Image (tube, rainbow, N blue to C red; front, side, top):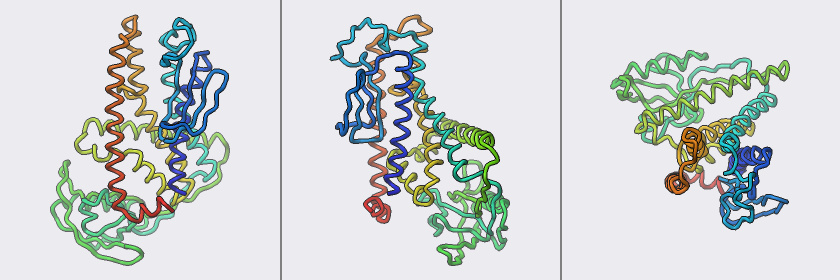
Length: 366
């Protein structure tokens, strides 16, 4: 069920994105003849007075169709309500509305989560640091550390029950490049000692390929007012948005080191399912993060994305006339092929990795 919940969240985010385009068009009187959630064969279909609404077999996608793109449309080509016949600003609003809808939705989801769970007040810390190896090739994983293990001591120094534990452990790892360190960990509630040697990283510091987190439980309180919820939600939204932008910046400027972290739909569903399995409310955080990522990806000035279409509109506004249709079609088709190729590659790659994890495969079919 957790897998279905994660897929449902992605479908909702896509629906929100496409609804943004749809509402922006219809509110301006622009003709829309198709609204589809998903791709592939039609499962359900309803013909409205102007628009055909459909649900298709594969929910990880969707589209809003305009008569401009339909060769069988009986709308006159000079109709002022066709999208292509509207001023640049009107078209820009329609194209960017999906991104805006995803950002607004992310903020509202964060506010909803705070309303349900409460306001985080403090953390009750326990000794040690919770860890997770970044991958199976990392030094930490090879040494025997697994996700959820708790490091209790490093080089004989106990890690305190406070937020300083993570800082201290990080410092010990960074300052012991090419030097053996000894860790005392708790693995499946059993004490265990192991030794490993951090390698020298790009910044001249020791690394073992591990993610660290505080060993503590958050304590929540009821919000004092709706204004407090919306204020804290705004701060969280800002942190997530800036952090996501920073992540995309690192991907572009340090592509060789970060390309392996790019995830496709299979891995995204896996992450969402794991969060749902741990705590259903975590799906709200998952929805907010993915919604922000979806918005930022779509606004990138790349062919076949909303940002690519906005780039053409910007050029049109500067030139005073649109880019020739054949050039736009060529660029968009090339971009679509590249995006589909990347999507297929990621799906095949991640599916292959998942099939090697028997426990996960069994969960998919429970």
